[in-house]
Image: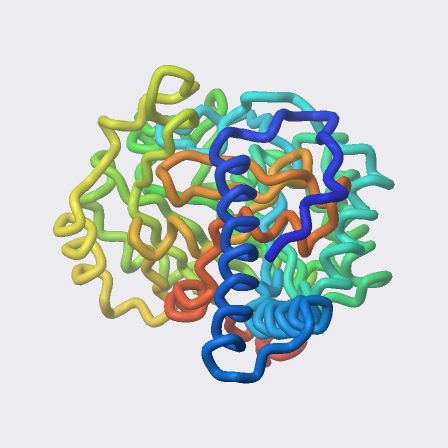
Amino acid sequence: MCDTAGLKMNTFSVIPSMVQLQLCVSHLLYIFASVFSTVFNWTSGVFMPSTSSVSQVDIKVDQSIVKNETSPTSVNYHFTRKCNYKCGFCFHTAKTSFVLPLDEAKRGLNLLKQSGMEKINFSGGEPFLHDKGDFLGKLVQYCKQDLQLPSVSIVSNGSMIKEKWFQKYGEDLDILAISCDSFDEATNQLIGRTQGRKSHIDNLHKIRNWCQQYKVAFKINSVINTFNIDEDMTDNILQLNPVRWKVFQCLLIDGENAGEDALREAERFVISDQMFQEFLDRHSSVPCLVPESNEKMRNSYLILDEYMRFLDCREGRKDPSMSILDVGVKEAICFSGFDEKMFRERGGKYVWSKADMKLEW
């Protein structure tokens, strides 16, 4: 059970009503456990004095908590929401321009490491946009050199990455995932996966070569939607040969890409489960393909927003916890909605350190 006695109000947000309800439920469960244990002792003829009885209950509850405690093994930190692309299905949009100061971000990352984090994935928005990638680079260095995390990864659209970034920070990066939804430039234009006249595909190949040169594992992420559902990407993926090709089904999140307060209207991008499966079947010969349906994706990621709040997506929206900077990881993670079982079933834990991948550079 999460101890809420010492909670202070997050300076960036107000606790949502859902979180307040969860707090009440937690306290009710604690009271129920205490009463049940006392009644059980009465009926079993082993009644103990009240102070001892409460102590016994406390011990039992604490042991249960330790046994079922969620560990932040793999965390996705969306430290910025700003992006230079306008993908129509984006489900983490530029609702704020806030970015934590570097020292505060490092403090939060250290708290996560102390709580069991093994892998950190930096995302956005576009993570290379802020401070021309130096902010991101310093976080990458800190996580690998100071925290000595087994895996440090990034998800980017690739448009802002320069070779000098690899020269300065590439040694400390395990995986770089580039989002690419189509190998047809016209389709990318329709989706919004583009900036001006730049070729997203040409840039993808350039970054693939840099990853090879600077010994960073290369990965591709694709969101399957109404505009690319009939495309056959097999040859292009095999040519690029990523260590993983993560294939997502387009997902609606209220307040992000659906609903009144959303900055995107993604309904026109949504595909059925059957359509998604047909796409997967068409690409079944690709050995690095890792499929993620809406069912697998929704609750199986630990997501931190720009304020370092865990985001609970169970109700089809993003309900934030308190910031780990205010209440710590153990308290905040109780309200993450994280499904650790689904995380493992979808293959969330894999060989994610480039030192263990045995790649031929």
